[in-house]
Length: 269
Ligand SMILES: Nc1ncnc2c1ncn2[C@@H]1O[C@H](COP(=O)(O)OP(=O)(O)OP(=O)(O)O)[C@@H](O)[C@H]1O
Image 1 (cartoon, rainbow, N blue to C red):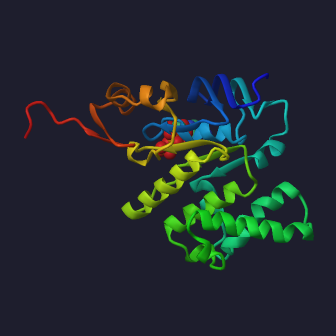
Image 2 (image 1 turned 60 degrees about the horizontal axis):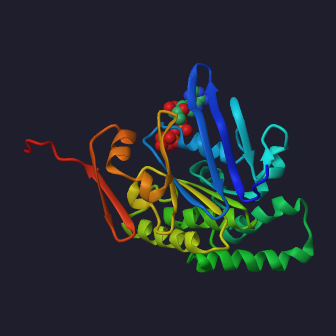
Image 3 (image 1 turned 180 degrees about the horizontal axis):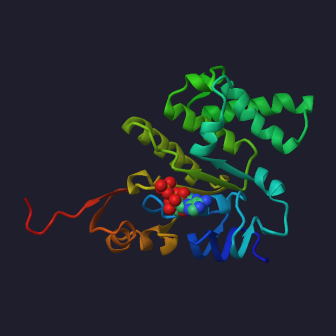
């Protein structure tokens, strides 16, 4: 692959399980400076697409390159440390007694592969920096089990950033947060999106309200197929959104945020 900035490159990618197509015939490219949101209803295939991008799944069909390596010809275990991944599946696997700072630092040890004392201070410093950037440095000594849902999400994002990845994948980071927690997370993700040194970002969500300012592209998914993809401003239209969620939706933009709701029936009640 010639384009070094191409972090995800899918050509005709499908994932099938038995007779079910989870995602079908997807062409999709993501470059280093792009920030993508993947939108779609329950069961559309968003997590499957993200797991492909996270080197957690092989396509059943098609060609998949991640960070310029062809999946199938490269050891997925070598790719994974270069990709940050925060998901509910990971959140559920964290032991309740794990200390927050250890949870963040241990992401780095996976890259180092073995204990090296001289890295210890550097790694701990970076973990504190990341926790601070996400507004939770004061929780460094707490255990994961004592954190609120929003604090857990932020801890896992800090962990995903610990290895200084080239690609950061976030699966529904705002799910389960209250309004304040959501707004705070959206603002933090917006800061990340606007940081030119940040990795390429891909965020999965069901809600246009959760699109952080600074995100540049969107991919709309329905029943495993791409409804539309490209620049956010071109793709996020009432027509595309209504098609994706299979109902007439009204889409509004206020400043750099988006809002959607079902269109009122013409007769009204
Ligand atoms: N191993 C499997 N065998 C058969 N079907 C599967 C398998 N794994 C997932 N599916 C189905 O594939 C579809 C896509 O799943 P996926 O988790 O990617 O959707 P999603 O868009 O992330 O959904 P949600 O928004 O509900 O999390 C779903 O209908 C799911 O039931």
